[in-house]
Image (cartoon, rainbow, N blue to C red; front, side):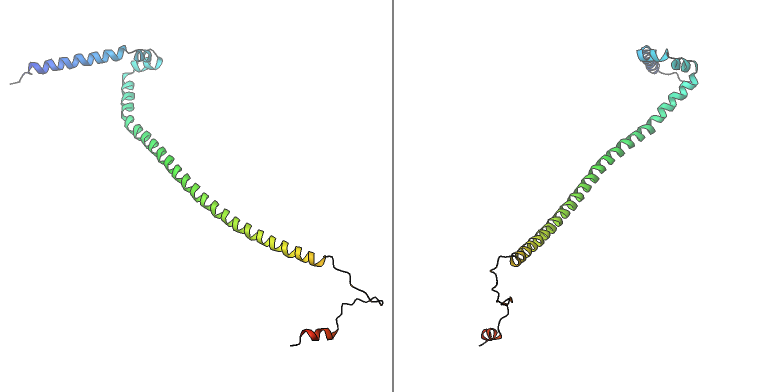
Length: 161
């Protein structure tokens, strides 16, 4: 014997059907849906329901993979941004330390060159002052010879103990 459905189940199904029909009616009365259905694409899909259903299923099924792909793109972009910032910070830090080392080396080289130039300047100026200093003229003999030669007797007095 077949059992009949209780009246509450039938009543629930009728209520559900009424809610669904109200939902479909609200979609059909939406201004954007009306504008789409009056367009050539909407009229074509209205005449070809199988194609419309296929397109709807494709869009619904592809939403998850497209969403995962967009999430992957966003996460990769954020990782690249953070990576670029970290890499840029690393490059700037290494570059700054390298610049500091080069500048310290240039400072030591500058000190060495300055010291060498100063020593060279002092030595050359001393030599020039020695060579070209105004000295009293040497007395000349009537014979015209210079009296620069010293007698050997003068040297003997210097080395006596």
